[in-house]
Image (cartoon, rainbow, N blue to C red; front, side, top):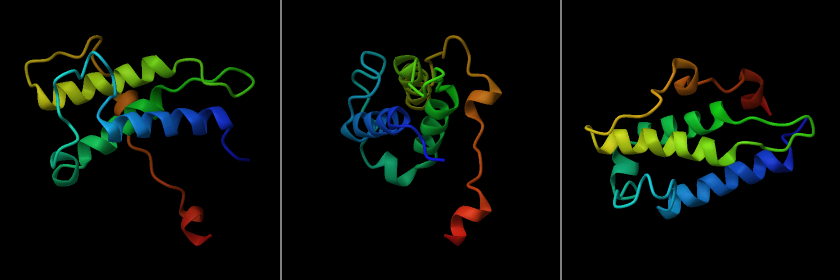
Length: 109
């Protein structure tokens, strides 16, 4: 089984906007999260991607139905990372921030 083209597209679009510094407008307007912090403190990148993916929902055909919401949740996290006074609303739940492992089998192929 492979991921749908819609999941692939959602991850591609999120990755592009993330790397380009245009993610989550207007939530991240004026916050430069693409500077050296991405390399020095890369765990915030990992967490943002986890939040994006953990919130992703699909319809019965495999189409992503809530891309913008996922992007906004990740952007809220990033803003709270860089701006301590910013409060994520609603607060992030534990399932949103869960970091899942890669399957052991995937390393063997």
